[in-house]
Length: 369
Image (cartoon, rainbow, N blue to C red):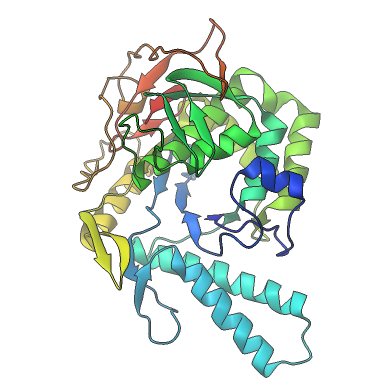
């Protein structure tokens, strides 16, 4: 889960230079919405993993919502529980320090978000969690920069700081954060982006990162791996049973094409309680999730769960390739470079253009909106 908070894991403000690099305001901005929700299922038998993205604005039941708010956006479960638990501790346990109360509330909020997501998906057990803040993402990206990504169109956005040209390009840590945050184009170019395109960007970034880790032998560079693990321990919240070294081994397998990402479908955009939301078919969500997990557990079978997104899901021409389960790769779009990101070398990897509704497989660098 990825938080909207512009603070560190202890709730402290960040250095001014970090806020400048994040291009996301300061410590008073953001909050405790889980703006990124992704379930990663890793089969016990070593088969291909599946990453399931849950759009943050999906309207659903919130099991632990306070003050009689039984429904809300799925991302709101965390913040509601944090606020409710913190108020309860402050009012009933005056001897508890603010820092301890805050950490207890954060723990309760994580568990509530996990419970909400599990119920939303049909009771899927969630054994471990990773919680990432914007600052944590930036620190990890700094450790592995530059990272190559590919875009279908030239686009820029004053809100996220995005300024990207069409085609392959290498991003530094600050640009990488803009890449995964952008959900609009403010250049007047006519490029249309939605929140679902941002989900796709998040998937594409993980796939691109996995490609880098494999093809630059990062995972065999033990000092760098240890640095990444140390950074993760400092900046990222994990459950006590999460084994980072074991996960690093899984990441090596993912990098070679061992994971596919899928975004859960929405029926349409709507308005509930004055909020812009995604209206979903809960039965479709649960059947899609079950089929994707079953196909991951039994890779010899064919999943019939590729969802159809009825609402606007972002454009993009579908081309057979790694993202669509095909074998041929599309040529990267070409376009003039700008100062926002550097052009990839001529030895750049092959790319695959996919639409937001398609599965996105690891093993290459996907071109996305």
